[in-house]
Length: 244
Image 1 (tube, rainbow, N blue to C red):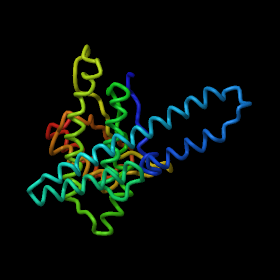
Image 2 (image 1 turned 90 degrees about the vertical axis):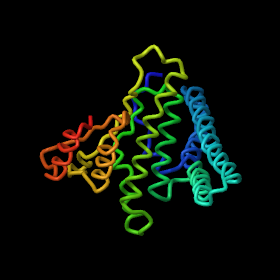
Image 3 (image 1 turned 180 degrees about the vertical axis):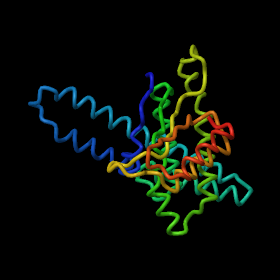
Image 4 (image 1 turned 90 degrees about the horizontal axis):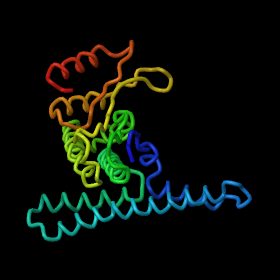
């Protein structure tokens, strides 16, 4: 594959892999054999079902590995962390995420798996501030997370994205110029009604990227005539600091 697409993060966040799997199963069972495109549609849906089951298995392997590591871990804090990772991965292997942390981890898995399948170039993250904002707002309002932890998780996410360039060489695309992989992420812009879409998470994502200035993601910020002055100033300061 040549990439250049956005994975369906919104669909995965909304339905979870079990939800998408059930949709595919229901669609397949409703096909009519009298339809001229029956064979083509049936083969496509079979492939979707195979793929989704494989994705679930992939994430469950990570869950199992973390649990195995926890069994031999002497440090109690690290042991608890590994058990939390195992539990989180087990949940999102099937269900929609219940928290900001789960949602971010699920987006990472979706990025990783799409890159492995497609060769890895220009598989873009998209509008991360829009996709994650409902999860962020819910956790913040319930006191389940604070901005410091959000900053830490976002920076971990950027570091993981930067490490993904390795898989493009493993898949035989080593004739190119190498990284970066153009995993484009953008913030800001407008909503469907034409209103300013900048939110609290937009600023946190920008701050995290400005602090790290990692190779990936390639970072884009949407601007328009009604942008908040604060947003434009923070973008300018980010560029001044050397962020690309």
